Amino acid sequence: MNASTVRRIVTADGSATLFSERYAQAFASQRGALAESQEVFLGGSGIVGRLAEGRPVRVLEVGFGTGLNFFVTAGACLAHPEAKLAYTALEHHLLPAEAVSALGYGALLSADMVTHYLEWRADLREASGTHTFKRDRVRLELLLGDAPKQVLPANTFDTVYHDGFSPDVNPELWTEAFLGRLVSALAEGGTLVSYCVQGAVRRRLAALGLVVSKRPGPVGGKREVLFSRKPASRKAGP
Image (tube, rainbow, N blue to C red; front, side, top):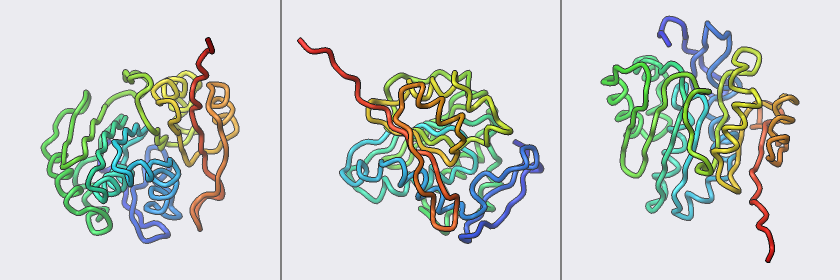
């Protein structure tokens, strides 16, 4: 995505995000970008407990965007000495390093992680393919290109952050076929969380076997957000 097609905005909680002129939508909630990341995705997914226990966590994100969800999750991982994070993100067009740098996330989150990511991003010239960033106990794998065409391993991820643009402007990320691939990629007991609570999306996830509900959104933010879980399979008896 060209830097000229996005502009910086400050959200209600003081954190910044970008507004896409192409999609006429912000990359994060204008009512609070940082609050959305911390509460809807990190907190809402239930992986905070796994990190606190020092267990490895595997995250799949749809829509890497500014990287805010990654930075927040990486910071939570590094707060616990034994925890490890493997973070896979799907993104069609990676933002330029200077556009992300202008958001000032290093002042709000792990400055070391943000700084090293920006240095790595500045040296990355490929517009498609798979690219890996490593720092401490955090591994980021970026899959660049059309998300529905990416190959995802089955039964792998502890949570899916679905943070793509809305179904109104990015419908290919919310089809039953694509959601089915996300559900397949979830490990048993894994969660899929999103800011989107459209009835059609909830019905598709339920039809794919997830237990779906709406939960209260962040204070001052969206009234409701989506939470869903992949139940454990029932093993046949003797």
